[in-house]
Length: 468
Ligand code: IMP
Image (cartoon, rainbow, N blue to C red; front, side, top):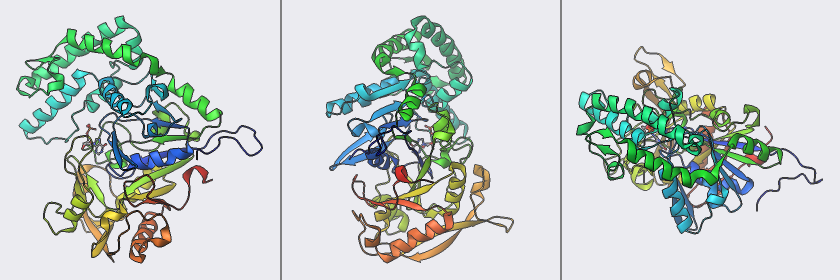
């Protein structure tokens, strides 16, 4: 059922809008929830990040991994918007769209791309790789980026030298801006000894002995321009107009709040604001249009890449709870295939996340992964080296590194929760676990996901109908 956009009297009304964000370090299962919630929405908007994101959907047993295309694409009739806050690799978008269209999903007719998106071309990707290699050689510690050019693309944006989607409609602008960028990048690449960096196959046509090649990159930009033209839009104007028509909109966050460039575990973060407030700036709507913020939260914690993780467990030794999470939860990154680090649920971290996102409700995902554990633990605060206790995650990597978690131990449950769709059908200990999380974090649980399948979800309140 696609919820109607008109009142019963038939008079048009403004739509209700929901923001979906990850509350931990990403990979909380946002894609499934966005797809599921779009039953009640007519539009889905991506507002930050790029193809570093990886959202997996399972529909009728068939798995689809999306990186750039908003997860609403799997529902016919839903318009998908890529907002100005996204850094866009058109090459990757072309690949993703081709895959979806080959599987019978109509995409290009329903996809609108902001003319203000900064572009990711080969130079941003290669610089990302060369920087990480340099940091590793210098022993200064890799960020563990996804190697997709995300950081350099955001740097170009704030340095006001980015090529944006709208520039592609003006070949002369592309030629001059690109030349300027490549000169600058080549200087930096020389300093980084990029000649020693192994060049992935997809970049080989654009890099020679560690230096970027202007002509092939220009030709690539032209190829991309022809493809993207029909989808280029004033997304801000279109999204605002959709809202005025009474459409419900869903704003789809990527990554997670603790990877936010300001509020996360800096410097081990991504380069965009992942918090809910950026749904407004990253798509061109006013903050008063964000009516409900749903925080997607895994029933335990995971993280890919480097950086502090107070409740991290040994997740490599068979027989340990961490290994259980890693294997039963199939904790491998969708984008890079890297193993995710695993640990206990951190309610003190979630308090920080609730604060910086203004969460209205939580959706707890992967509860079923904890089935069969004898005991489950919740971190409720941290012991500091100076003897003080904190009940909320502090700011910054060094400060977090110094935190020793304080745990509450609860009884686990042996029954399977896979596919449960009613809250009162959950084992009593699973309910106690969820209710303790709710209590410590101070945010009500709106939904619980009990398997990757679209339909295996317990709904306690519907974000689109919740008047808060
Ligand atoms: P970048 O976003 O590629 O610059 O990577 C910076 C950090 O964010 C690294 O630790 C990545 O592993 C992490 N990261 C980026 N995107 C995601 C995601 O979608 N899920 C989880 N971690 C991510």
